[in-house]
Image 1 (spheres, rainbow, N blue to C red):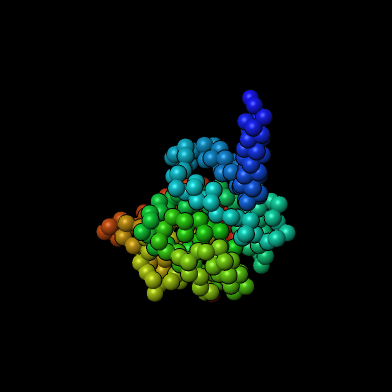
Image 2: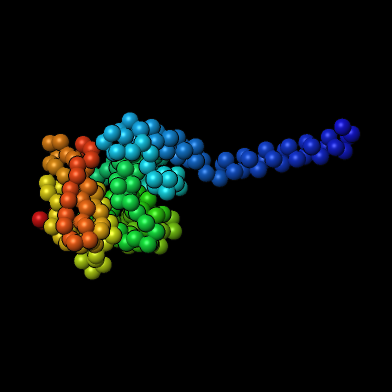
Length: 246
């Protein structure tokens, strides 16, 4: 190697290292997000008998790999933003465990043209995951402070296909019904009839059912093209209760 070739090699090497470092520092949470996804994949394999599958839809996993969960948790929890567990977000509410978010999203079988209703905006994380996969997400939050905060954060993150409303999610959002899918992120002691009515024939709803102090079940609700409704229990879960005047 002559001197000029050696010099060029050093320059290329240093430039390459500099570029690599810049790419790494551009998203300091990328490695944590990747580790979270790998842990979710492992949990799915462990619960494959209940889920009737050993892997979730690749599109769902890609959404989990993309959405910046650290932007949707309190600043005091940034260091644990990508741990595979629920985190408190204030007002007695939580941001759900990423594994549960992934499973609930997968069970909805979201398609690019779908319009989805979410009951319980919370931090906005579930809405953001859905927004990566469908055309429009309508989300209802009963706690005004949380709803307004989620609306601002989701807008700042560029999610123009999420509309947040403050209100009692038990009654759904009739104005935009029917929905291809509905996801409820708080536990009800029964499946709200208004939500069943607002589910499109051929649609799917996922909802935790049970009281706070008893075993809750993640329930998949399916409405066939004739309007007949069937339900299936998927997993035991633990969610905060669905609140409201109902």
